[in-house]
Image 1 (cartoon, chains in turn cyan, green):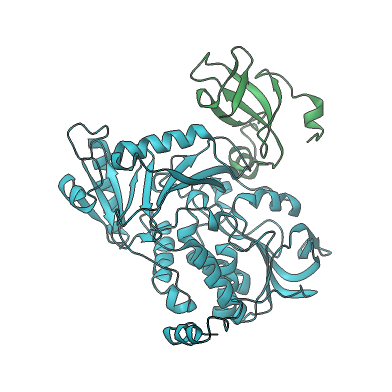
Image 2: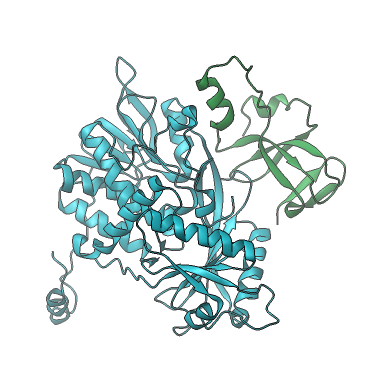
Length: 416
Length: 95
């Protein structure tokens, strides 16, 4: 069923009883060409691009729980491409460009809102590093604007710009094309579009192990819904990458941490930019529902618990209130955490593993949501062709042996 | 708020501590291969379950110590000296 204004009107006339499920819930087949473990944004996008770009439709997405129930449903929905190094700039800007056409591409409204992403400077050193950052973006062909203190005040009237402000704002820089997208819609849109092309989405299907052939190559997965054979298998499970890697028999340069976020009660439109203050740890935007979405920091110890600690929450709220004192009467409605897969250079891994026919997409750490289209696109490419996509070439597991790291810790937005 | 048992100061709030990551990593000798060196520097077990890690009571006595902690429940399974060996029960795969 194609979604359109006309379809909506037709639905209204039928008292909205004519809508069909957005994707099927098939029984697993015995064998597929490709099985993708993880029904979050990256896994679903990879399945979609396998079908759309490469014509490979005999694909299963194997998800332990429900679609988008991991980090895809636990992030702060920010999209941006303000990275420092050319390799990352190419990858993340490709992703943002795909986001820009995604609603039309998928016939599903992902509610992309390019409202502008503003980074604040609170000291002379912040100003200098933001100038360097904006220049690096220009060198990589991505637009960025340095903004003065006065401009910040005009762009974001909610910020405390008074002389008594706890953290004086001296200026900042903005990526106008940055903004937010609706997280669930991204997962659901890719799922629906992949399903329409013939991909089987298998929910409540947990992987317990890998099937292996005579020369050690992966030949499928053992799941809670039976054995599923596949010529190639991909892992796209973010914080649980090490768990799957252990089942397959290798290790990753990944440590899993809990990254928390929270929303306040909804209020009328008040903040129409994404605002981040790296120095204090405040990271805020307003959702279309009206809630203030506040990104937290990492609990800086390894964790698989999908809840954050109070110590970090307290620090994040304090920083947010110092910059936005007018939020002080808002109540927090929900607080949660996602398990993020942090690697030492805060850059992803998209490509082969030491196990033949097993591929991986992981290492996005605190910033995987913005990269969903590019992560899916490049993973699909290597799964279909056996060769790395040129954008993914620098982001191989091998770099942790060669030492050719792409250190984006400074651009990750969240202190590591 | 999680509390950690500093062997010298007793139970204290987690924000007095700094986690130093996986403990008992030993540096390979300088003639080791790039592969072995990369494994030492970057690759970790990152277990979902019992994890042996070192912590420092940074905003307290400042001393390092080792713990075994469950990475899902955050339960502290054992506390031992920075140069000690972990209790056999934890190493042999209890929880």
